[in-house]
Image 1 (tube, rainbow, N blue to C red):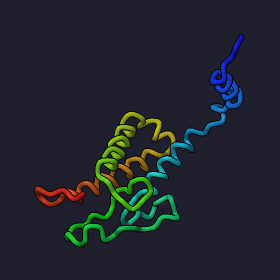
Image 2 (cartoon, rainbow, N blue to C red):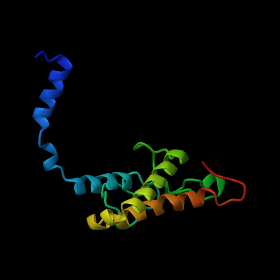
Image 3 (cartoon, rainbow, N blue to C red):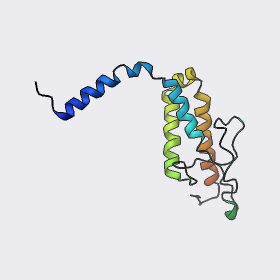
Length: 136
């Protein structure tokens, strides 16, 4: 039987990684994913902030416009906050909290997810505080 190059690569890949899934720690991956999101936080960080290497940042956001825009999440690990990607992230996190509530509770991450949702929504409320005006 002839096995073409792409098929051979797949066979070798499956042979090398066979049984790998038995050693994956999904709880650890979940925790690290949530900590990654926490590391994107902007503003005055709470005392229970897990990435200890991250400090407060952008505490004066909105100062020139006389509005407090500290908080929210940075996009892609830089120092920029974009409303649409942040809204997508917070919405997806909220859906996950609803859909996987028992699983998140079992891993001890439910409160961290709720705190993450609140962190983003608090920022959106501040960004839309003035009547007929949304800060971006």
